[in-house]
Length: 387
Image (cartoon, rainbow, N blue to C red):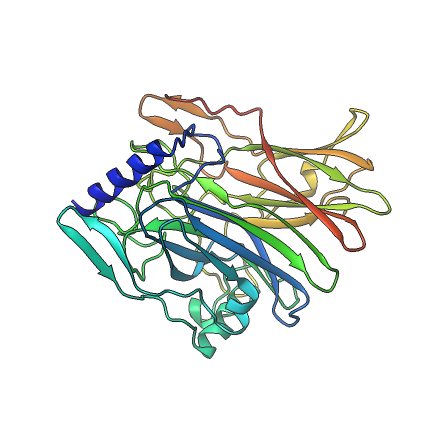
């Protein structure tokens, strides 16, 4: 009853606010889940690489956002709650999370959860993580052995001091120690809600260079009906119970490659299966991810197929265009990505082969103290609307 009332109220609020979204496309509308496709934090230098984000509640009812950090092997390491007042927001600085354990304020608030009254929700995430926990989370996101994984490894080791991964943010109805990979997180009487009320922004910053670039967090809407394949279906083993729309498999974006301008292609992609930590020095069965066509085009219309270089082998990747992993003979153009699924729309939902969804974001270095970013454009989009 509690979930049904909350979902009905939130759906009504969205309708009243005029939010209209098309399921199966990445619309600029509030959603039940947000994706930060990539983060990178230099743990040794406060003036180095860092990622910051803001989460916003678009509803006139207070709500809770459950923030989950994942490694670049798509293994979750940390979950914490962010309380959002009605139409409120919260900022998250990942350098602070990794280095001091500082989490966003989780002050108590009142949640409308029952027709008979209100439910007082107390703080559920600690204001600060324990020092030993911080060390192990940092090691996990650097691809090193971690006690979080019984001294196994859960990510790719780059040999530096940077923590890498991605983040999901879900609308939930209560405090929880569960993660999206846990039984009971999705489905009937689960903690994850279907209210499409969250939106937000993020930025990748480098204080030493004086550069920053950002974009909107990727909105992933929940549907009021069962879907054939879903966002969490394969890498979190949700069996479609999350009812979140899958992302597209085709993306394109402009890039620069000349003396003064360079572009990093950032691609989040579904590994196609849930992943367990591995003995250090080994990798998951799916590594490297080789499926897909990755083609760079020049401004003159000529193109070069870079697929054989396997430019995006991880669940989240940052690759400099014209590096060895993603070469191009062109100084200016666009990158086109097709993760090669056969997408089928049926009466029971959208069927997307496991591992085919992704999201492209490009970060442009435009000269000293200058940076920009482009959210990848979907298309041509083969996902059919069922409405």
